[in-house]
Image (cartoon, rainbow, N blue to C red; front, top):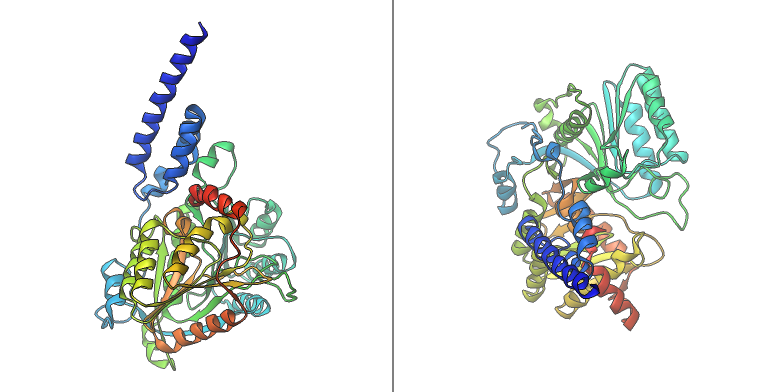
Length: 461
């Protein structure tokens, strides 16, 4: 009898493995986590199949799949000249021509970022909209909510949107305080039941604050004490945000309004930028707003990076806290190294996600062999997300150089096209690299084993 049971179990296991492999092959266009899931299914077919169907791949609910693209308003001449191949590619993908009358200020110190948030809120006259992946309840988080409440009591339209997963531990009292003051606050796809774990993908990872459709703060910093504080210490993270004044802020406001309407159903009126003011700005910055995710052009970040890498002629500098590139992007980086491009990747020595640190080990080993320079920032977490290609374009925003940002999250970045602003971002990167250590950490059998094991599931982290 036991032999019959064993035989039937092996047949069932083989059948489930075949079913699972077929599902993975058909559903996963970009091999996201494919090898890891196949390994788990082969080791334990019933459990592996159930977990893969529940959590694996690019799971997306029907509401995300049917979501409309963000309508970014065209400001100024719709026939504005496109200066280079990157601008032409982005316009062809539906992002339109860059806006040209922007003023950009780099925010690189935690106290500076905090002051900028308070300045933005205090200066709002009609609307103030804030969106973040994580909002904590420490000093800065509470101070920001208090300022928003004060503005709401003054009659300013206040909207606060936090991600349901990233801000899972945020108490309802903070959101209710905004409501009580006359504003509104919401969680993006609230994690209210175990079944919602099937939709851990497509979280809203964007970080944005917009006042009156004219001024905005965008970057990688969440509104948490580790990143935005008036009293930084040795544990404070390194990050970079941009203060933007001008027509790009109006487009960024459109992204917020689209997210808010998608979550709440409320249509928000938008403050429009006066195109007649375009000629009043000294040293204007050219910016393209890039919404990434179901509401942006399909797989725009992946397309952009492959296009930009292949068109690099001198340098390609990347700063990211998590380096888990998709296969095509990794191949593009390898080709850039072989072409003699100055490829640099700057990461923290130790990030807040240790498994990802192990996963990046083999990627770095392969790139270093081809001439890539890897910089490890000691002592602190580096959370900035930067990409600089020649003097052609620089990307700043919330998107990491990893599979999750490329394909599985809502992200928001801006592309900088003017040389003056690109140079300031490059100077910030170079200053950071000066205090870094070069290369990877020493190879050991334990580290190599963990790197191989974790890399199988790196895209699901």
